[in-house]
Length: 236
Image (cartoon, rainbow, N blue to C red; front, side, top):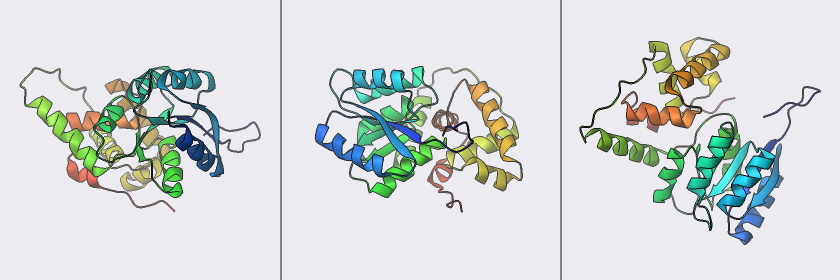
């Protein structure tokens, strides 16, 4: 979230990319009803979506998967290359949509069912804007199985960059979906220290967001399903 010159919080700027015009019109209406959120533009295919994001630099993108000219996965990948700080939420009609996993690997922070309740939409937008991820346990298990399958092939891999014990604690907490405040409280350190450790993790692993940190942790066996199934308590 940005801050105005008088120190007050600016709104969360959202872009919508979906080729279903009737659905998109309704979604735009719902987003515009959310406090502190505004729609900066709508695009009806992936190419338009990339152009829109390049021009408007939204904070959050609601991204459909199947679209003409460029699909949502390719568009997500291009947007994250252009705007690493922009969070992308994949829109899907089914939890078991196989393309959702590809969207996460492309850089999306999570997914949202198209028939979700308005409060779920609001929570998802604010969650990814705060730097957190929306990865359900079933999707997390699929991630773990995929990377375990990759390890079973026997191919050689470079040794992972060394992380300190504190950084390992931080990355496990990130996988649990914990906020900076929750991590700081659980480890007895300040939020600033948490952010410093997180920045060091990103630098060492050559990544730029929590989703990639979780994927790395799954791939390297740093976390297990108990970590991914964990759901932190709501903050006051």
